[in-house]
Every structure is written in C-alpha cells, then in structure tokens.
Image (cartoon, rainbow, N blue to C red; front, side, top):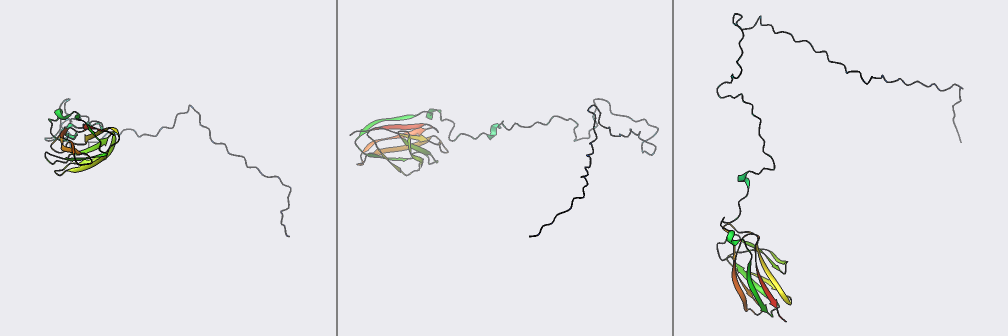
Length: 212
C-alpha cells in the first residue's frame, strides 16, 4: 500500500483583502450628457434671394397642395365588442313567424300498445327542416331531417303517461318548421294524425296513456 503527502513549511496562508465597491451617494444626481449647443444656420451659400426677407404662412392658412390634407383627426378604431349591424346573421325562414312562436298540443290518447310508430314528413316545401324527438323529456331521436318521404320513428311505451314532443331545431330556408305526422299502435291502427307549424325552439306535444 503506497501513500503520498506534502510536508508543511510552517508558513501561514496569505489572505488577499477584498476590494470595496465604490460607493455612490443617494442624493448624487446622475451625470448629464454633453449636448452640443445649437449652431445657427448659414444661408451664405443658399439659393434663397438675399434681398427678399423670409416669409412664413399666416396662422390659420394651409400650405397643402391640391389633393392633400393637413387635418390630423384622431384615428377611430372599432371596439371588438361592437358588431356591425350588417354582420348579424339573419334569422332562418320568413320574417312573418310570430304566429308560430308557440308550443302546440295535439291532445291525449289511450292505448294498450307496447310501442307506437310515428311517421312524419315535410308536407310543405322541402327546405331542410330538422326536429328532435323526446319521450318524457328523454331524447329518442336527436336529429330527424324531414323530407318528402315519410320517416319512421318507433318509441316504446311505459305504463301510464308518455309525453311525446317534437322540437323544431330550425325553420328551414322558407320557414316555419312544418310537418305532417301520423301515430300508429303496434297493430297498425292509427291513434292520431295531425300537422305542426313551429318556429325554432318551440315544441309540438302529444300525450299517450298506456293502459294495462
């Protein structure tokens, strides 16, 4: 096993003192930049006529050329929260839709059927009418687009009251949301048939009471 060591010469360690940072008085003003004095202009070699005094435009007069303007009006900026009137999207359908802004009720019917079949179609212009169908506030068909042909929706019934609703999701391109519908029991017998004319967001409803 080998080991190495350095003999001590008995001298003390030399400590180098730290140089103090120069102190700056708190109330001492910062140094000023040396700004050259303004030198007067020399017109000795100017193309100006020395015999004619310099003239300046009178107050209130303008030296602008034709087609120019010296008016400095503050530039106006639109607020991002201000929507121009022509940028507001138009409501779908015709403007005369106030009479359709109400819910429609198609009556109450009794049946012993376990389910019903709903056939519905757009009986007016085929303009893209869409409805959502509920039973007892539960969605059974979220997006039913009405066309000229009948669409079939089959809904199971529970004992007691079964409230079926048709919500107008739009008014198509001509407005309002229009449909002709028929409801059949599980034996194919017609329970009821009717039509709805609804503005967007309104519902047509029918109550089916399932008897034991």
